Length: 100
Length: 414
Image 1: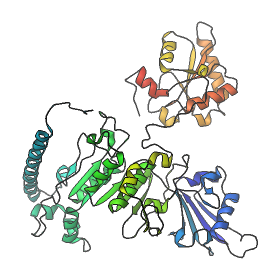
Image 2 (image 1 turned 60 degrees about the vertical axis):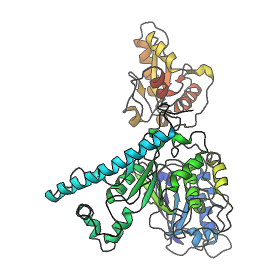
Image 3 (image 1 turned 45 degrees about the vertical axis):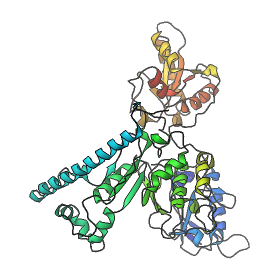
Image 4 (image 1 turned 30 degrees about the vertical axis):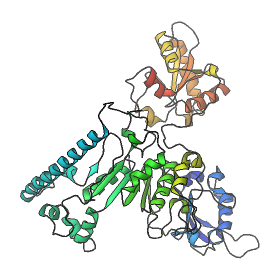
């Protein structure tokens, strides 16, 4: 499945060359025929994250302080970990800032 | 403990004086507005009138509540004075804003928490656009007291719970702006706004980028709905240019411990809540966590270093700060190799050290002294240098900050 992934708020530093936007082809998880957010997170952890994975994921989910958006919509409104992604979806991961 | 002035005047006398001064100020403000409007009628420029707009209150106690509302000469039921029409004409001409919008602004009150990089422009714009009552809270001006880490508190609240002071300061306003620079304060202000049922406009910035979110307004979530658990202490602190402006966020979480329907979080709980331990981070970035990596024998104080220089002992001073820091101010002579590049530039360091040795008259082996801003990176550097065979390497405890404090008071602090 073709997806556009964006990383912000410093999360891009965990990726190769600190690249923020990644156009990727994500296969369905074993035994399933769709890509869920849960599947995407483990795919990102295995394929994109180059360092300090604990800064991105905690357990099955994103770590506290990271906001996930599917097509500019809070992923909690789309089903959270169970949200099913569709072809050409844009998924954004942002780490919140607190500087002032 | 009495703070500041230390005069023996009674509370009543001071309050009386305050009332008198406030009345005088109102009178002065009104005269200023009249004169300004006369000026503006005859000129096309905006003039230097910015300072008189709104009621920007700030004083040496760092947090001031604005008690008079509806300033700006903007009477609720009568027409607008000529000077106000001229000043806000571009607002009034906006069909969706108009006179009614300006009137609402002039009767609104907004508290800006934090007057740093975010709070300053926020406060300036709010004052300029005609907000009737504006409060600014910033602890950084309260140096004379011990409150520099507790940005929302007044001197009068010394000895009282921080959260009481914060709650009392916020209570006076319709809207709160969070422009603070740390996580525990952000959670604290959000919880406080939920308890007092005030909307919270939260800004965050780092470097050239920022994020903006509105919390607890028309069913929108509170900070805790979005972030029930605080991020790990070491979470990346860099900013994004893909902020959260314009995205659809979840609504208030029904089971949010603070703003949810069944929340049992009370003002008493709020006052007792330890935000610093909840977030595992301090309310001030001035108390950066210090590392302790080296044995005492591999460390010297800034005063020790001064003596070493005065005695003409041969040494090389290695400054491991990033280059742009080094360019701000440095001790001369010193060699700048940023910590991130130290390992690859060890040969260059070796060469410099040999040159220093050759140039010294005593023929003594030169020692290697490592310096950074606060004395953390220098320890990491010395640890590496010791492992790589630079046996004489020592770091200066407390870095340039200690140098400025204990040796050279003229050394610029940044």
